[in-house]
Image 1 (cartoon, rainbow, N blue to C red):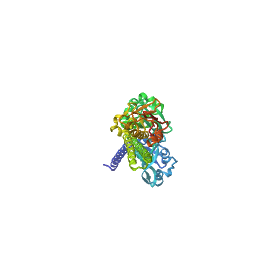
Image 2: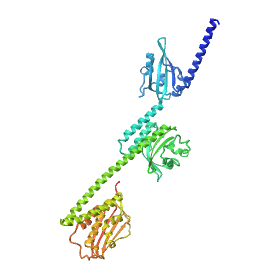
Image 3: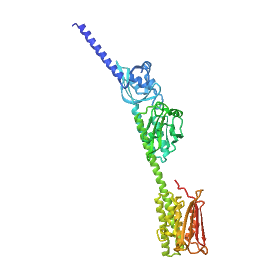
Length: 514
């Protein structure tokens, strides 16, 4: 083989190797997930791979020859102009060096931002920079995941400072909507009996108006409540194409919604509220976003329950404090009046004061058994008259069967127990219960106006010649204190008829606060 022929063979082999390397390089760049750009010394694009086209929305034929910095890297993350001399790419051109991988913010052709991680290096020939290579990786997914984690931390910090369930729900909705880049987010309270949802407050962008008011659940779609009842996030990517919502999609169009998420809150196995996210355009909600909504909802409902528990605790303490003060005031009054009525006799004082304290204790036990909620007036009468009903005089007391289920407030029940005790005590000393043939009849009647009438009638006791000249503690309690304790509009009348005492008590049951 001549030298020339050997040279031709070597050249051909080199060209084949070059073509193979070029083919391999093209295969790598064409299939790479990263965007790859080559630029000349002025920063003009001389090559870009398919991933670069997809990532930034520029067709290759349009971006070639343009200065890359001006098209995809012209602003800082805060939106201010970003001269090429100040950016990492400009530093590469100026120094002919290589920079370590770093994060930056580029922009697509439509102006939307793309968080990226990139590395670049200068192409140096004969001691001068002739171009540069730039490799760009889209880190949107990672940044979005980081944003969701940051949002959950922010949510936790803000919820710790809130005491109102409504503020808690709104804060959760605002953070959820903002983090997901949605157009509207809010919360609503469900009434499963009336089949309505009431939205008090929401968060929205300029793309969708605020949405508040009361809406019918049937306008969402058939089976919507059943889906919420499962406790899972209800997801709709496109209200027009989803078979569950296609029939009611026009109703959603009226409020500007094309995609949505709903996260329910369950109380005692029933849906009580929802957090929701609205999108003005169809949107494929990814599993990470659904999990984020679920996490926000769980934290929000837990914080709301904590706030309600703290509120109940505060109310309970306030109510307990109020009741203790009332009991102490009542005991103080009983002690003073009993001491006055017994003339300072220690034995008589102990006897009468002890009986009244026991009566007060029975009233307290009854109210505790009813959870300090309104108690039936029948239970009130039986507790007050327990010493007589359980003793030998049980047959002398008739409690007529009329409206015994009428509820009275704890304060009224306590006052009535003491009043019935005093009536029975006086009847035992001076009236119908002081003789074996005496009778006491008690009748309770509810009026059409909501008032309650209780009549105490004695018969068969010693004849009453005239009303007593002296008013004892029991009489004063009935005539002066009972009306005040029973509330506005209450009246107490004592008539000493020849056949025995007749007491008429009229009052209106008082509502129990909160």
